[in-house]
Image 1 (cartoon, rainbow, N blue to C red):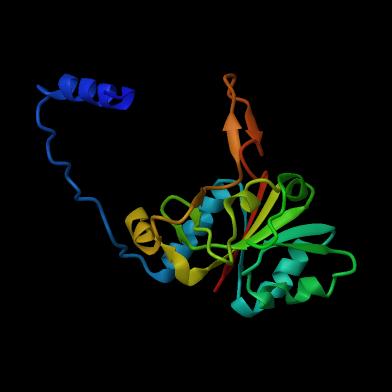
Image 2 (tube, rainbow, N blue to C red):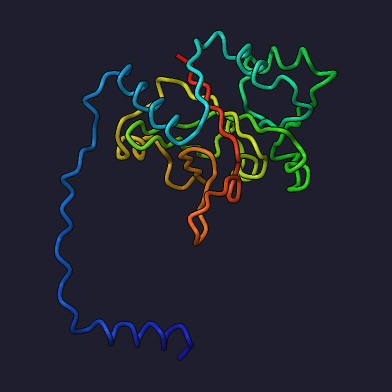
Length: 211
């Protein structure tokens, strides 16, 4: 008998007289009654409360807003599938701003990611009730590491991808894909309740919501 089999048999023996688990009620809300504008307003309220900077911008103004936010930056990283039209204005500053592309063929190292000023990604969906933005590793969002190492994350989110409650978001996501759930900039508190930002991810979160 292997060690694994021995452990499993002990567990089965310990649970042999355990009472049958009751059925878990699942009567929570699975859909939203909010309008698109109400979901947008709620998400903005939650994100601002989490100390994120939020910019509601027409889709055709994405490139200009992104260039504005990156003014003064010297290097950024983007996933290989980020829409090129979003980078149009940024590329005009190519001589002063280095744009590093992370792709399956060219994966940036942790040191390279730590050296950039910001990462720019899209998002899969967002939950307005909790103020949570979700990335699922799609080509326009990239590997989890590129949104966790740089000190600043600029995330572009389409207003049409905002839902109200978590079950709606789960239904949109592919469970087998690597996911990153973001509720504001990274922050934690030590035993003395001192808030420290940037420990587990970006210290600064800018969200551009495209309407």
